[in-house]
Length: 123
Image 1 (cartoon, rainbow, N blue to C red):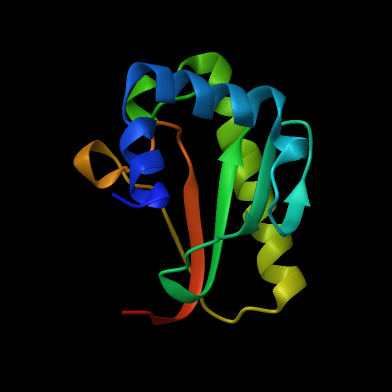
Image 2 (spheres, rainbow, N blue to C red):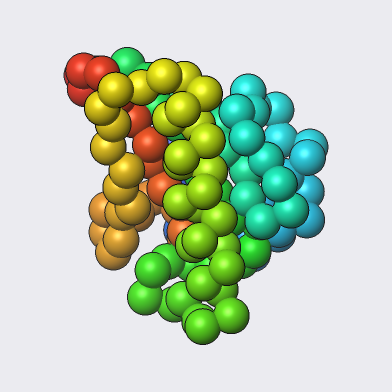
């Protein structure tokens, strides 16, 4: 098993949940990613393994597993996601785009995150 597959398989464990959540909550400044937008609530960066020609990940800086686990107090993070989308779309001058969030088995990492993308889907 290669390192990438191993890390993704670890991300779906309880310890992986803790590591991923803590990384985005407390250590996001140390992530080696190409940032597009960041504030105290979230970080947005180019996806390291894009599925579209232009593919951005937007991740809250709080341990939130998924949409279903959102609490009322977490809604400020969701609001910040939409503010970030507006800024990024305007900054990149995208005329069309898609914003999506995966859940259940479609969510590879148990940290709520959003995909903002445009262009053709990559195979």
